[in-house]
Length: 111
Length: 113
Image (cartoon, rainbow over all chains, first blue to last red; front, top):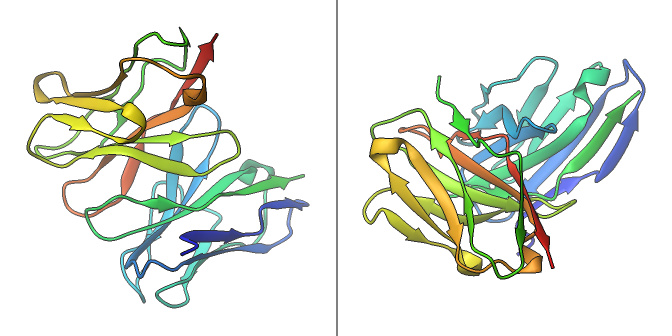
């Protein structure tokens, strides 16, 4: 089992460019999440999906969109990247009330 | 809104010494509490979790944590630290219904030989 995988590992964008971060899990979990990690702020929830076909906003959703493509895949899209979106992005998955399993992260720099 | 506080940004301990990392939570009659560890450049790995029952929880790598409702705390402990324990540690809380996590800001542990 690969667990949670994320692509790409690194990305550099210019302000205004768009991109999609991909996430997939092979643990048959219902719930999936996108977080961003910034120094001194821990991880903050951007969006989550409690089950296939549903998505909800987290703490910091502005500037992002998500798609729960199927049970395995949950993508995060930046339509017009801004320097404030420079961060490390983590995808996670879980069964309800249980631990979340995290991917290795995507390090994004917006110039 | 719920919040998780980790008062110590950095902690340095000598190898072989004991360790306690502090965590205070703000929400919930029935909090779900977690400790995660993150090595540099890596994702997060679960050390232990508390849902209910025994307030002293054992985790992986020799870590344990004690839930104290009266103090709203869930401190992480290890009796003897190894150099490989150097990492960043995050305390997190889940809402009573559902599984969204709120994380503390993290504590960076440095181990000196």
